[in-house]
Image 1 (cartoon, rainbow, N blue to C red):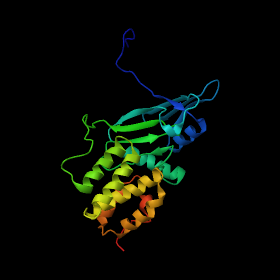
Image 2: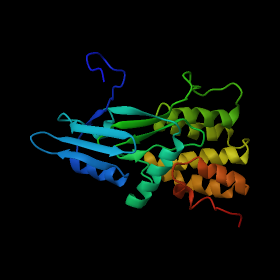
Image 3: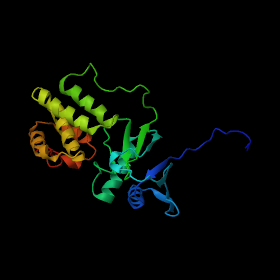
Image 4: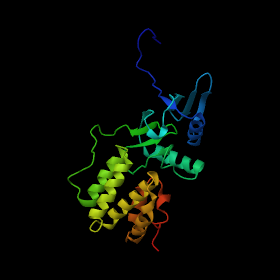
Length: 248
């Protein structure tokens, strides 16, 4: 093999900041990653591997706040994101008893047909899984083909999935439900209420969940519509008290 010139076979491995070695080790092990290297002194260096992924960590500068989620991150390009989200969600259920939807670490929701989701590690790094054939020009909501609550739901989807702004999505859905909730189809009302319940868990804003849950329970939904609403949330367990799985 020729070695006297640049070869187009480079491998790039992200080097992320680590605030807590123990929390980082616990999290990635819980998701099924192997620890391929672990060093604490004279400096911190951790290496993880799973499938074709390699992650490396070094110590974070003093004063880094994981809650700010500004430590760093990387993009992981894959053929299809849904299997990855399903795999990590199931690993979380086994290790933690639930899908981690708030704070650090957590996983963002996956809506069927979406082209990306994000894992946020205990140090606030964002590991973003993106489908390789995701369009270069993304449609960022506000479609003129949509009206009323359907348009609000579309804008909230963009705020959550691409801009990762749960607070703005919460405000948009809350306001949209007030304006259009009486006239929108039942399934759209249910989608908005389910999203508000899920967002309330992650923000957290729990005080209105019983009200929204009662409204969700009262909606006349078919079994197919209930299944559709369940698919719209990262962890259907958050809707279990309010959305029966079958007709009573």
